[in-house]
Image (cartoon, rainbow, N blue to C red):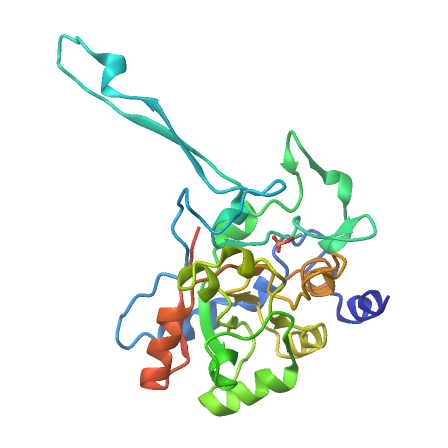
Length: 289
Ligand code: UVW
C-alpha cells in the first residue's frame, strides 16, 4: 500500500539515534523555544483542552467511554470522630480518548513495529509501553512556536464537511491568507471547525461520523517543513470517510515512521477567533504535562 512506501521515504528511524523516544519533538531546540517565548505580547491565555466531564465527547460505544467519577470517602464514612473532621476523596476513571489528548509514539504502529524499530511486544497490558511510553514526551513537554492554520475560515465555513481532505495546497493557501509561515520546530494547530458538532450543535453522533482532516500527502509537507507536532479539533487529525473500512494512513506515517505525536480533540474556537481578530496566527504554545 502507498503509505508504506511514503513511510519508508519519510522515516526518521535512527535520525536522532537508535534510543530516541521523542521523534520530531527533537526539532524543538532550546533556541527555537526561546525565540517562541518572544512571541508573547498580550499575555492572553487560551485553554485548548476539553473539560474532563461525565457528559463528554465519547458515546460509550466499544472500549471508549466518558470519564467516570466515583466518591471513595464522604463525611458519612467518618462520622462521630473526636476531632470533628470530615473528609471527601474521589477517583476519576477514564479512557484518555474521552478528552483532548496527545497520541504517544506507542499508540500506533503497523507491521509489528512502532517508531524507531520498537517491537509491538514492548507494550503489554500489565506494564504499558516499556520503551515509548508518553511520559518521555511529557517530561520534556510540548512547548514552542505554535501556528494556527484555520482551514474552515479559509473555506468560509463554520466547519468542514466530514470526509473533506485537507491538502498541502490548502495549508499553503491558509499560510498566505493569514500571513504566516510554518517552519522548523513548530507545533501546528489545524482548525477544521469539526468540534463544533460537540460544543455547539450537541450532535455527538455527527462528530464521530467520519471527519475532515489532513490527507496523506500532507505528511511530505510536514516532513519538509520539519514540523514538531500537529494537532486538530477533530478526533484523529486525518481525513476519515464515514462508513469506509478502518484505515489510518496518516497515523501510520506520522506516528510510526516519522515519530510525530498527534494532538486530537483540541478546542480551537476561542484561539481562532482571537487570531482572526488581530491577524496574528503565531504564538507561544506552552508545555503541558
Ligand atoms: C485510533 O482511533 C486508533 O486512534 P486515535 O485515538 O489516535 O484517533
